[in-house]
Length: 188
Image (cartoon, rainbow, N blue to C red; front, top):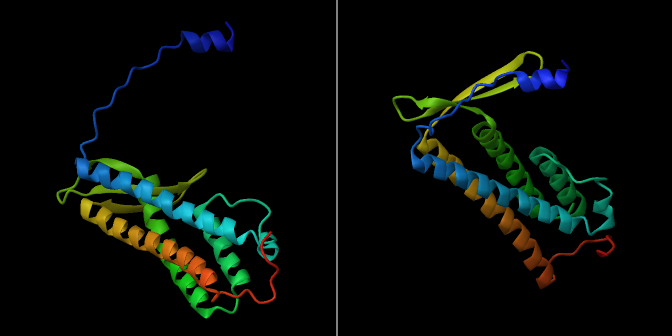
């Protein structure tokens, strides 16, 4: 018997799962978190692409970053490189970067963690984030309730507003002639 035919002859268990005992408003909040995070990341990607029009910025990366942290790192380097003398941009970008990293950590835990199947007495679900390869290096547990998700969503909406405001303000400043990129060649 070949390995392939042996595998075909092995029986498999038929397992079905029941719907998760989670209130619909939690599913809705999780869906909104996914969509809103995509919008935040897309805004950062778009701003990086716009700044990459300038040769001095284009040199900062050979390929597009994949993770959110890598995108933030590149975005921050782009802002520093293209607008080194505009203190308002630097402080705005520093503030956004710090807040985005904090929110990303919580969002990653909620979205990529392993959710318990039962709510506790407060209605919260245990969500475990395990970092392991050959052995468990770290295991973090948080309790996620609808209130917790609403706080996360509010923080994400603030981030979304800030990155959109930053991008639109730069366009407005350039349109008004207030944004001067001293010594930089124009975008091509």
